[in-house]
Image (cartoon, rainbow, N blue to C red; front, side, top):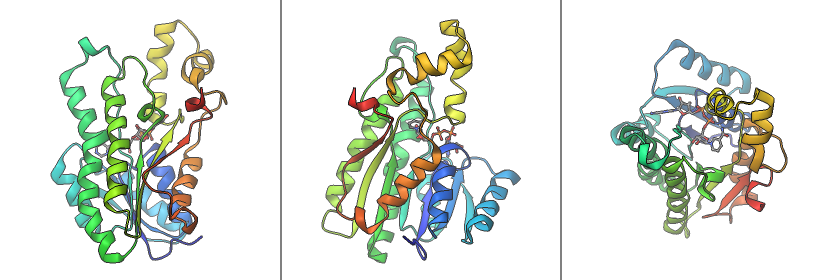
Length: 257
Ligand code: NAD
């Protein structure tokens, strides 16, 4: 399928899943806008790499997804938004009674509220263009819970709820809204959790990956950023036109347990 002529904005995409999704949408022909809150040479170099690799245009736009005004400015600066992928996210792990307030606020803002603000700015553009796809990167933690991840689980459940509302408000239009719910994917966000988990459980890296991280992932394999990108491309296809307001799990069987 070709996404030629479509513009995709992917939030939080100078790394991990967002970068993988940007590559796959560009491979399918979309012009892409990648984003994070930094403004380094390497951020712009990533955009150049995507453009060269797939023969599309790719721009890097700095915007801090913890700020409502930046979320909306990202979409405005992009100038067009046919495909919106809300992906920016952070994690913090602590019991509820010790959970730092600033971490709660940051996770709710970046992982959940940003999707509300970008969607609000993007829907008028999709309506004008007569076509649109909202793809929210939620998580298996948008459908299930784990202890010590209160803010993350609350935010991801919130994203799934927002996805359903977006789908209902656009149900009579050629716009769909869905959430992709990955299980564990080996990205910098997950890599950063490995040392602490090794220390907590007194295990080596491989044992932590198999027995702790992938404990609930029956396939015992990480999902890959390419698989998530491929799922996003599918959601942009004609075959997916009647898929809206739902979740697609890419979790090696996690939510079947
Ligand atoms: P990552 O750390 O590699 O990527 C997170 C991205 O968000 C980065 O590009 C980072 O720069 C960006 N970001 C962070 N704070 C931001 C801010 N304030 N403004 C703009 N951008 C910001 O992590 P990832 O694993 O690729 O995670 C991407 C998304 O996928 C997240 O929403 C995460 O919750 C979700 N997810 C990841 C996994 C996994 O196992 N890796 C599983 C389920 C869901």
